[in-house]
Amino acid sequence: MAQKGLLMCVCQGTCPSFQKMNIFDVANAIRRENLIDYVAIHPQLCSTDGDKFLTTLLKGDMTDKLYIAACDPTMQVKMFRDALEAAGFDKNNIQGVDIRNMTTEQAVAAIEAMIKSE
Image 1 (cartoon, rainbow, N blue to C red):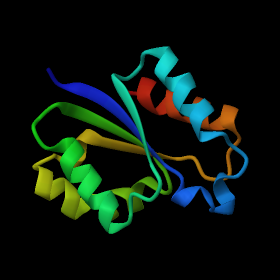
Image 2: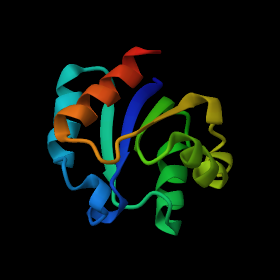
Image 3: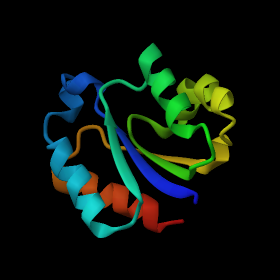
Image 4: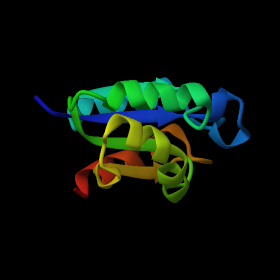
């Protein structure tokens, strides 16, 4: 059964652009809305282990849509290209939103809007 997931990345949690939000409150708010089937948080998706995580997560056709809340969505697709190819995951099934410099409430609203726009 294919699922929709939300993957959040906050640049190791030390980047100043993520200091105004509580990432766990964001994840829990989205999870409670039942807009997605699962939520995961990774500290730095653009790292080598981020590629490994994405490849592992997306292999096996269990996820048919992945939403990513992190940095610039255009950069996300470029950074994750190799991992998506390794997993056989169509980049058209990823949608991203930039949550940098947002409060917890702003990030929740931006993520909800992204998911509901589908």
